[in-house]
Image (cartoon, rainbow, N blue to C red; front, side, top):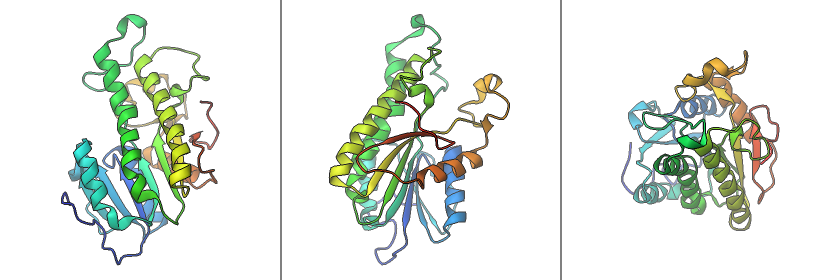
Length: 253
């Protein structure tokens, strides 16, 4: 594990690289396992708050981050020698609930502090990573970047209401992704951006809501990882972000 401003992968190593941000999450861990199974020569840089939760393996370089501006700058400096070799990026940051956050059911539940925290974690942090990574993602190889979004962030698909802050944060994330895609299309046309709806995954994030999930619609993290990599492999157009679900179907913005 490294926290110094040095290359995490030797410059002479010509292997392709995948970045997984939020690597200690269930989806992050499952995706890293599948990436290695599919491409054993792929080097994986795993970025998380808890590097101890990331497997210790020769193909994984684990970096710990508190997601501050200084930490992002330091990690990008460590990725300098990966420039031109990064082919996959997964940003799986987000929160639906925790010890202090709960999705609101009615307007009277809205609180400014909670709304801002939902926005910070679900929209601001992924956007800051897209900003910080631009210099190292630009290059000759096609690079697919996927960010975990949610169908409830779709304005056109909102039929039930509720979950005000989470919906708003994911809608903001989607706008940030599309706006970033336009600029990436000019400055790093090898990069395509994807807002990905994973469905309901059997993790602590969704545990309080499992009773309302239809039979057969609760997915394992391994299944979600497979669907995600399948969607990332689909053809994409630079300069135009996609909003896609686990079945590869387009979700309306």
